[in-house]
Image (cartoon, rainbow, N blue to C red; front, side, top):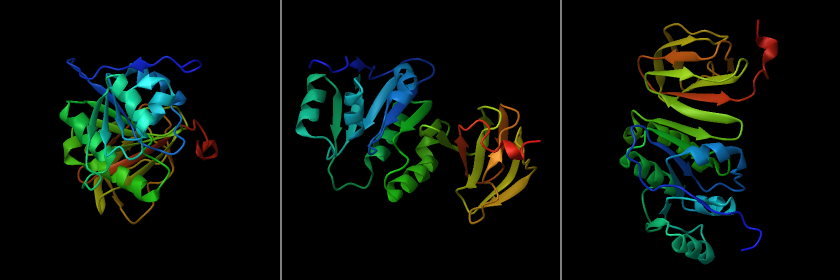
Length: 238
């Protein structure tokens, strides 16, 4: 239609050594413009149900759509069908959320990196469930990141590099009752073989001083929340 952006399609499969997948979830008012380069550079883009609407609105065509499709109207479904997008329809009465289905599909396809857009904000129950799903055993060995415009969340099972800018705020939050043997490098508040506890907030609001930093741990699951604020806590930095 006149005035609509030309659609950009993404491949539906990949045979390379590294596979980068972007999943677009169904989030109210999701803006995809800030993620344009991420989307264009992906090997595969998967929409979780209504995430397909955001992609179509941005002039982007997903490779596949998964879900019960209750967030897409008939015109959008017809558009996806006309574009040849592979649509996997599931019953509404199912055990998994649409995003969970998309994560499992990406893992089964062999994704090495999975970036998820639209998983944060909106309903608290969905947001908490989306964070918890980072611990799915099917995602072990893959770098999975929940992205917002100014923050990203990812899980550390053993070790991770902490990329970013000098002054970025990072929080280290246990997802298990205890996370033991935590050692950090490049952070303002250093940890050395430390233990963080699920019900305590000790790991909130650290600062990346010397990027790239690093974190290692011995036991447990550690959530890293990285804020792209480049010095919001400069008054703490010596």
